[in-house]
Image (cartoon, rainbow, N blue to C red; front, side, top):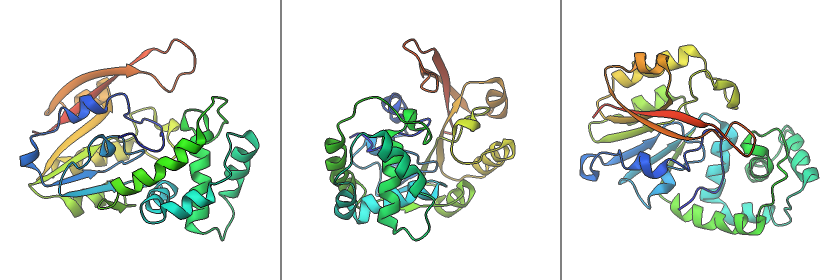
Length: 251
């Protein structure tokens, strides 16, 4: 199934390729998506493992996922009169800063900002037409998929420590090296270094997505590196350049 939102660096175009690199299902019993984003890899299967975990450091994103899981009907009600509207987009963007909103009200406004921004940049209004009614109706389907998924809002290092076991599979899609400015959450060089150190300590398996660059290849030279490429969705225009990525795994 598809995710109900898009997100910077989303893996919609690469999900089949990424899932194809998963180890055999019998080798893991827990699946943890560490940098969850839109959850495209999570949603690529009806169930990856007996235990599934979605995590992201972005509190608004996690609140949206939790409201979809636990309060889908109330969220749909809050979005009942949503239009593809520049005015509604900027109203929702400004209202995100208001104190006292309920979780559902905040989730609805964040959903609007994601859905109606260009490339999910959360800043600029997209002029592309979208079927908003279908998108809102789809929330119920997503709620059913999330029924048994644990939703976390933690730093990646905490998640790795908490869920690490020999039967764990971690999928990680961190902000890419030297493209961090496109992401809404802070990620600096020290975080890339900290991530590498945390992965080295894992007992479980990991599959890691990154941009293909000299720095990443050097840092992860002791692991298997698989080349991929896709269209660069951070560049506007009819003809988009190809963007090279890598998958890195410890199994």
